[in-house]
Length: 107
Image (cartoon, rainbow, N blue to C red):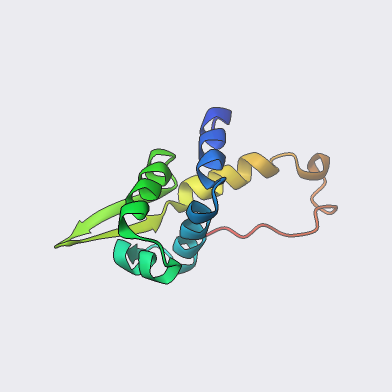
């Protein structure tokens, strides 16, 4: 289970439209992730701005990066994402799973 401070840090990192869009794109791309340039191109964001956003998301533990030659690939950290969702929904509907409307999906 994540600590409240970790959840706050992750939510704060996502509380910005560009970072939220980056994260959602990385979630869709799966564990392989995408090259930084691909993300910038798809979201129409300058590479200089992207590095700032990647740093914030990385610091919050939401994304991981790996160097491959001259490219840097970013991928969502699904362990942190699932931990955050678990924390937020731990006592959903007072623990009555039948009342919760949407079953949660795990990656």
